[in-house]
Image 1 (cartoon, rainbow, N blue to C red):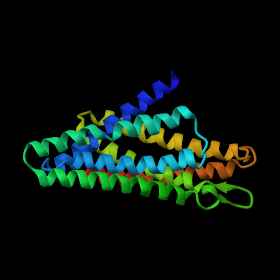
Image 2: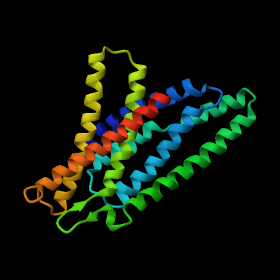
Image 3: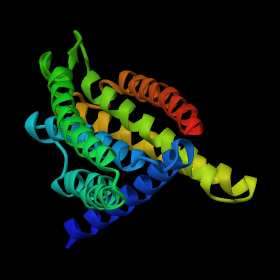
Length: 235
């Protein structure tokens, strides 16, 4: 039951994010071509390749429930084959054979290429020393920090789109922004610390290093979130 609940939560976030991204892109580029569906499917394909490699094949320790929430719930709801099929059928029905064929060719080829790219990136991140830079008295999980940055970029895009789509008082908008970004920075940093503890680096002996890693991860992700917000405002 716990796994079903976390998949449902991940799916809810994925569905909302898909709506915001695809709707924003349609408002920007118009509806002459299914740009929004193409974008979420390509991005979702890249993410499932990247995260499958890093969370499963590279044996990065993560609870099965959370893995299911990300891979099955979030990415499953973020991408949509059914909408792609419906939009392609509508193009055929309207006699736009060229656009329908282009949508099929670009969607299939782009999504396959995105999955491959995600797998390659995931393997590349963990190719050297399993994604960990070993120092004389500590270790830096740089692979996981890059994954955190990718997630932060998506968070920034979603926050920008969300704030443009909903009407809230300034105080509530600021609260929403702080809660979303604060939660992500907290959990992404916490996972780095737990990773180090699991690999024998005790907090008592490495407290300054771990605190420094938390700050570094926070600054790195904050900058990437800012970049995502700038990108989201352009959609």
